[in-house]
Image 1 (cartoon, one colour):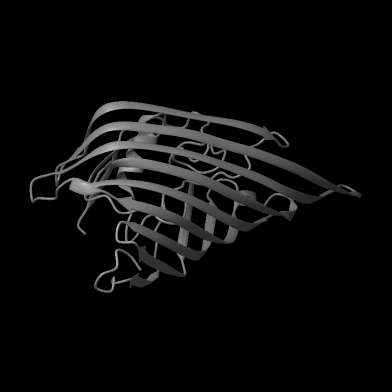
Image 2 (cartoon, rainbow, N blue to C red):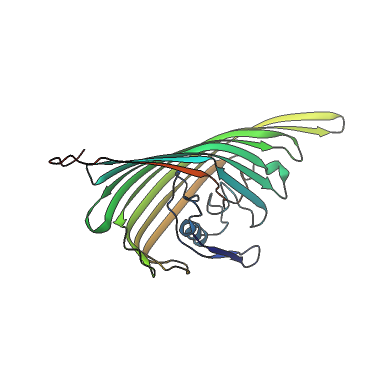
Length: 287
């Protein structure tokens, strides 16, 4: 896959220009895709508001800092996908991917972190005539993160879980050298609760202070997209139709964003796919 990305504008009002093909999303996280970046999801999130406090809008969970302050790299260790076709028109798929992530905060090293986790996804797809498909996907992600201390001695250990449910109905469309057209609707609901604790040890003149702090974060979004998308190779995609996007957050912590990393990733991992197709015996309608 060939693609090109340009980031233009000043630091407080950047925008992204890109060309390339969209990849199939896996792992319950629309920011990561097989063998590349899901450019359409990335572009959509930027268009809906850059840095307006929306978690995962582009930077990451609860991040509100300008572009260029941090870097966040996510490396998938492996991926296993199992598909099983049942009764011709139904396909059941399950995939899982463990990963490690490293974030370095350039201006505040106390926000640097390492993270390990696993993404899982289960989907049920019904293929209908003339390329129309109905799909239901359920995703789950579990992470454990460790953040190191910078100006204070100590760190933070936290864990978060993400559940997502997606439903879509539409036409996969035809692929030619000129364009790829898709028509349909997509609904995504995701909830990301987080709980964590942080221990700080501060040394001053003649005294040592220790403090333990606790935070919880609840984040969720509803994404509804219906209409028609037109993809032209070498150009940004155009979407004709209607779009509605909502994100809400309730954050209880000690006053600063919990994680301050950009959520653009570099994925390096191997794929292992298993396709199981049940071939009906003559005279039978399914497996």
